[in-house]
Image (cartoon, rainbow, N blue to C red):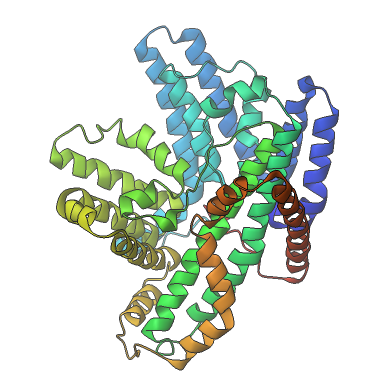
Length: 471
């Protein structure tokens, strides 16, 4: 995808910004729309039609709701029409082959899969578009009368393919009136570069450790090595996804938009509940506001509350991909959250913070093993390796080798997975003006050096995946 490529970094984004800043405000949405469509078409040209169709459906139903929705029944009709079409399109492109494969396995049928390519970011822009029509039905946002403005919202390239999921209510005012100032641009550039560094210098590099361990043959990895690999994947996924969110938020600031934060140091969480308040916040809050609360939330009987939680987490898992491991991963968290709520939550609260943190990390790291393996046999083998079964030892010399070779990288990754950077910022603010000036110069030099290093890695490295593009 273009976002992770050299052309985007050195040509597409600068050209977009130059033109965007040069034109008057009345033309800025037009420039943003053109570049957003070019951006998406570069990676998935045929699916531009799909995005245009989805946005037209919600825009049209929104206009009909505004024009003819004088009764609740009529408004509900336009809402159901829009949501049904959105979910049908999402299900067809993302889950059709999954459903066919499941039917073939259960019934012994031989239905040929459709072999459809997955439109990049379809889950993100579908959920964004649905937020508009649902909030309009609830009377929480005004009707958007300009289709090009609405299409600009749906297609906006900074967060189009991997979030955060930006609701219409968040950017509605800024679509029509926004202030672009030097301070915000500078903040945006720094935030974008921080994301770039996290992606290229940490996520990609720790990802090579994970790939090296996951490809070991059965019986070659000790339990310690398997846990090290699982921890490496956890770090890779966190830095990869949070890096994209940082870059998207930074680009938003450069363009005059304020996107929501999507991560708040989730690996520093002290419970599973706390973890999901910090990880992929825009998705968690979307399911909370549009599924969990409409089902009754926790203001129902215990039985219905359990039902609500399991439905939400089944859907959360399924949202991530058309495979049973994602469903299992979602239900894994649903069951654990139920247990935290009704069984051991009060005992957990009484534990020291370090034990609560260890408990959370063990669950999260083990959970991401379920997340990453879509092959049941490979998942089973890896989980057996983690508990020292299946002929695997608890410790092997290969683990020591990996630790020696990746020690510096792992230390850096672990440090920046915790709120070290905000702590350093708070310390810097206490310095005298003179020392802050010296520190600012040193940071500027450091940013330039890291940018050059990241560029060198991008040019020379063939391993540069964005893990969340496939969702």
